[in-house]
Length: 105
Image: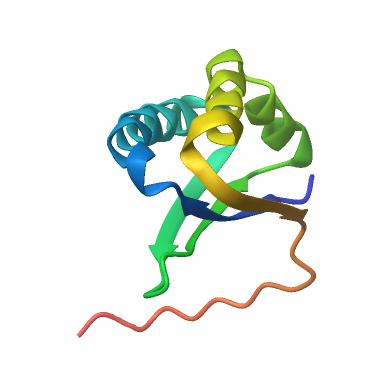
């Protein structure tokens, strides 16, 4: 069984790009969810404006397929050219994973 791949995407948006970015982000979210091996995505924003998204695919190969998806490649280009003031991409595999689920009441 292959190991899951996690991508941590840290970014800061350019304020003037927010409206166009939102349209592209919604489209990319829909596309990612259709990709084979997609497990989930969570996005958080800090008070200082930094955004962090954690994207999980079931394998590195499926994560790489998402990276190379044609519309996603265009979104990446737009991100560099118009949307982001800065960003960092970190791709990793979990060393350990622990899960706790509270029993239902």
